[in-house]
Image 1 (cartoon, rainbow, N blue to C red):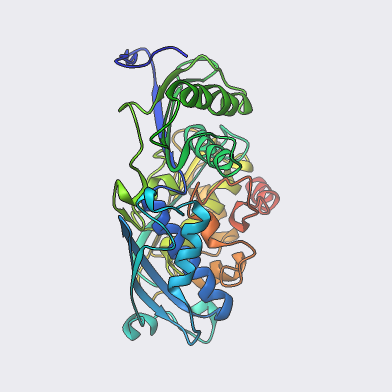
Image 2 (image 1 turned 30 degrees about the vertical axis):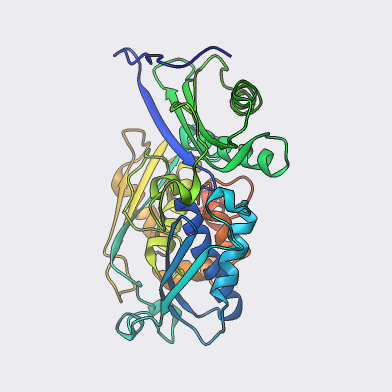
Length: 398
């Protein structure tokens, strides 16, 4: 493999470059997201009408669990957390974070009744939003899954690397990993400009073998999976080594990787975290609905790219606003598109929860807490279905 140290990347004006990053399930922030969502899964399994807003903080050999949970169910928060951390692979004291020996402080309390009174309604369609806020959904026709290519590739790199680590194939590797993919959109066809991976490793490792495996067996393999070029620039562990990682190397917080969770920066983000929140929180359910709308519209040929913004007021069911952006790729007027949205999609929180069965999910929220909430080929998600395409096409003809 060519030596990458000190290489100056080509940033000439002739290139239109866009970059997205992802992180593995062993990243400190993602540990927090997964623990929070595993708690949500456990609560909803026992009490489908519970209200949950859990946050986590990790550092070396320590986990803080906080937030609000309103339920009559008995939940063993500590055991849930330890099981998640074990599954990720933090099972040795030498990693600085061991599910067996780390200290856990549980500060969960009951949810405020002031919030709950605006959400709980006898008629589910009258259920108010669990908080105010703005949410964005996005879709593009540049990939089969209607997701931007850079974030899709970045996710697959760390997801595949983690799979190989857990299978024992990726020698010397440890749980904490990051990826970054730069696509050259000025090329015809588009091509990969640069792939960067930072992968935690054992202190006693063969650097050449480790980096060669990442380049040949992970980076090139993923590039070929997408039908892309393999002559991209390569950066692997640019600091020289990456032994101290996970919570021993960096603190982690719930909801700090929100761009990784969504579209990798290709679209705007409302700012709200998804993980640890039950679906009455429109940060989560509203964002899922916005993605569903955007994806069905793009699949119906309304535009090549579509961004949907929803906004809500706490305790109110109807969204305050619906906004669209088509980035000059639309085949119809904004007025026509909005008319179709209003006729086809019910954006009230209760309607979203029922449509996607979010209180009786067929998936695990924890599985979404790493590698993104959208365009997941490995998980059957209700907001990824293209079941309104024919209806949209019919309305567009009217």
